[in-house]
Image (cartoon, rainbow, N blue to C red; front, top):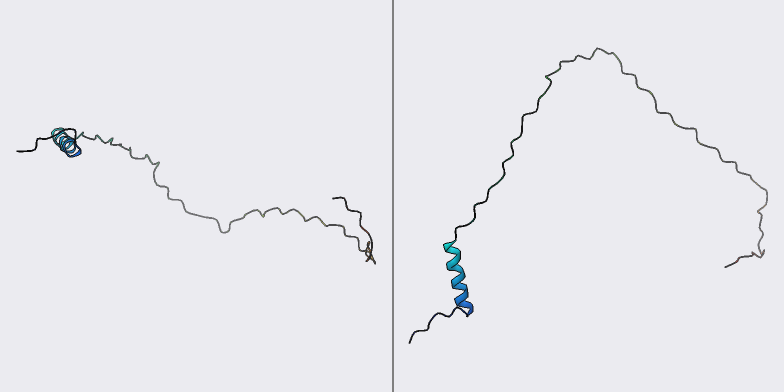
Amino acid sequence: MQRRKDDLTFEGAWKNQIEEEKKESPPEEKKEVKVHEAPAFRGQRDVVEKRSEIRMSKKQQPAPEKKHVEVVSQPSSKEGDDFDVEW
């Protein structure tokens, strides 16, 4: 007694899917081909440098500000002073 094909089993469904894929032709992929135009140049320029030296302006640097520092002979606080600190 032969075993008949059952479409409800995994193996039967697998075989059916493979057979259907063989029958279908694969979709043709159309690739878009971009055509680029050649750039239009203005032509070659033959320029000869005639200068003997090149002058460039210097960068303007702002003058640094001088801080006024007052020097005292004794520190403003002494050892043992109480500080009022609010936390």
